Length: 360
Image (cartoon, rainbow, N blue to C red; front, side, top):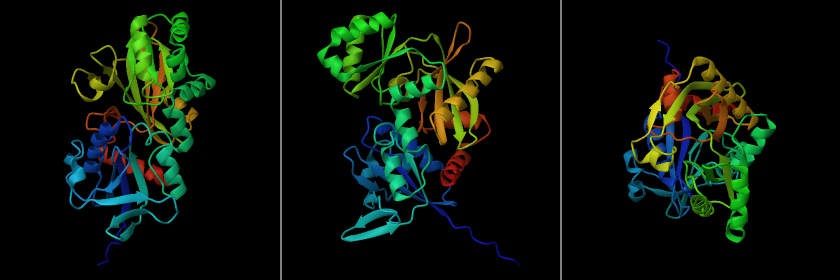
């Protein structure tokens, strides 16, 4: 009887946490990812990055401890690092000894600053380790909403009118900035820090007083602030998967149940309702899906992204909102839900993402 050849397991490092306002979101995403990775296929190395920047190889198997932060107290934990020197892999430290672990691919389940902005991607590129998601340039461009706007404008993609405000303007010439925005837009005006995700620091201002507060709050998160016109429409999202030939999922819709889909609506309260498929006609859905692939390609993305749109109530016009290169992967996140509705279950989706990372 012929014996089956044993397949070598891939060594997968899952990075989570991070020095970012979205640290807690990352912990929730990583819990789901780690619970859905097939241990029969992969040697899994979960590495958490604390809020102070310490790297820890988590020695436990109970991933439910991640969201609460209790994972940091596991006695089997080891200090860890990924060296930029090629061939070093994952380093973990046991007393005076350094243990090297071969890593075939990294899944950076990191959201926001230092994880989604090209920083970690640059480290992994230097180290010569394949990773899930777009590369340095695309990650940096998509993380900075003002750069995203410039690329989308150049690509001829319909989006909300916008203005850039700097934190320096907010501090030194606030009244002039307010006058400029009121001249450009009618209320309400959306205000967003240029480099945050998960709606951190985002506000919908209906008055000059509210606009003042929104700008001052956004300036706490970034030196660049985006002000946008209000688009009256449904919030529709599409998941994109692939490298050279990306495919779009079915469309999903979010009814936030609040003024807009803010951090609380996404992760804390249960007021938001998700509709998969979105409550739009098939012709409009196809336009949204086509636009998502256009945005993904224009930004130079690879692997995955979630692309968000508005579909206006009048005329069903498709208006690009934002792109997220490392979207949430919690049990209730749109990206895995959209592909599950498109016929790709969560675990299989992770398999495909790892395969795409190795294709680069």
